[in-house]
Image 1 (cartoon, one colour):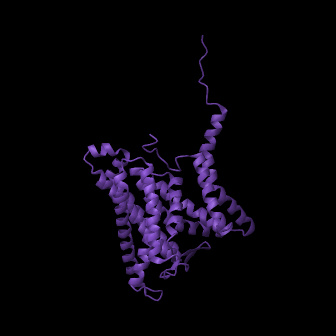
Image 2 (image 1 turned 120 degrees about the horizontal axis):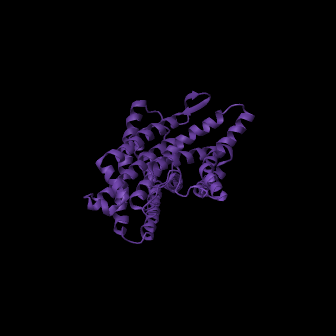
Image 3 (image 1 turned 90 degrees about the vertical axis):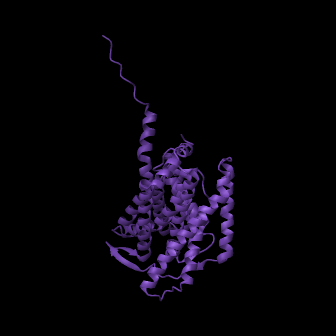
Length: 351
């Protein structure tokens, strides 16, 4: 009688690698919050400070999430890193600030004019930024669609510098103040000792409905399905009768509109704007998109929120000079454990 053959399991080194890949990512994400929670409990006996860090981080991260979606939408459909997208976000802030000045809104304005004024500014900033993004795609990217990928990438860098100079000519080289119409830093409510400010509410109230509308549009509408089909296989989508050029333009329009909305929130949140905010903000948002898994909408949102929390904890406890190093250390660690990002999916290039 022959002994039953027992299939050999994976070697120990491979099992250890699988364990690290499964639990290491979670450990990396929880590293800072756990360390700071232990520190707060030992020194203050509560978690109020950490709670305030997370609230501010989520509201700040919501802005990066809106910008990050633009990167991930464009990459998902044409596999282009649109480096000019950060400057679209900057232009959204400039449009909002200019319109607030044109409408004559000040810190002394009453609630109703401020509410409708900001609503108009939001719509105009979204339309302006979206239209600009479509024009950039039409002029600078579409003619290079069949060119080597380096060509549109360099063109995107060039468009980024062009828009930076537009911002420099528009508002000058110094930071410009924006009227604090919402009394952004004023406490709205306190929950278990954690203060929630007006700016936190603005960020969430604007961001969450936009994200819901965006995901619903992409998942359920005919144009959204065309976007997903084009992202999977442009040639097959074209054979099915989908107008690929129109679909790609729509993608740029949506990404630009979200960047415009983020520009308004940023202006109201920070109460200052300047021409270079698009470079730093765009870099952070792009990092969020990569961290979450570029090409994945939920990943872009998750990445934005995580980076917002990391930034806030680092700024508050370690000093803002350490924040970029901390954020990018997280990015490197996440890429090491999961190169496709937290919720990453395979792209056309990856197969």
